[in-house]
Length: 417
Image (cartoon, rainbow, N blue to C red):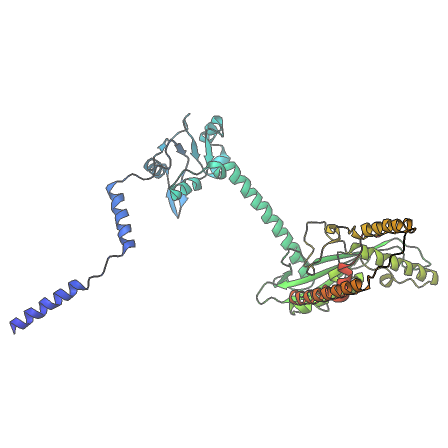
């Protein structure tokens, strides 16, 4: 019926009006900004007071930008654009190729001086337009600094490439260099350790020229993930062929490969890997071995490797030496403990004073209780520190933090002769 249909249409229209969605504020702001730009509202005057000249074409997101486009950008932001260099020019936008060719515009800018006219790259213009707050300082965008930065980057790239190629060539002697490279740790230490030794003579009766022997230890790491590791060593001797140790050159986990690395290092140097920086201990072992060597020479039983161990020279202070046990301090950075000397000198003066004043009455001091209590406190504190160090060493995975090694690390008296 016509009356009913009209009422339904009226109801639908009223419900649609009540269900209108509120406008999105973000879209409204975008529409307002677009409308403002169409009306010709002035942009921020980033280049106010600047006279800018450009040279050549530039690429921006795949589009070529010429002098007309640059002039439009500069004038829209309050600057002045000129096609040639004048006495009022403050900036010259130039490419690296034109700068190296010494274009006449570049030579004219050089005559004005760096303080008056700065020769900058095209990135300076883009950064100024993006910031829209103030004109960027040309110091970081000049062609001189840009070319210097590029040359330094090339040097670093060549050094890194040469170092990588050396590692690849070393891998070629043991494994497939397309799959493995020399491993590095978190400190930047390269696991390519060189051990050296000089043998004065091969026999006790025959005198021969000194022989220089070098062991080079390698820990290889795979390119692909998950990482796999290998261990290998190379022995080079003067006037002798090179020999290779390839028994452990098969893929394994890091812990297993590093254990083989540590074991081989200890066999050749008689020093644990975690104690490699203890130079004094190494010299002490050398003296002991020299004494044994002298005794063997007298008996005529001189044997090369069993008498004189190989020596590893730590890198200078400041360069990486690899991961060290928790709390370890290199000998060069240790501070000598003078408290024992002061206490000994103080006790000597006190004993002199008491002996000189012996004419008075005898005084008896009961110090046993204090000594016992202090000893108990020291034992408790030391046991607590040992437990903490064991927990930390277990988390770090450092084998040098055992009780026997910790004594060598923490209580070595480096000041005594």
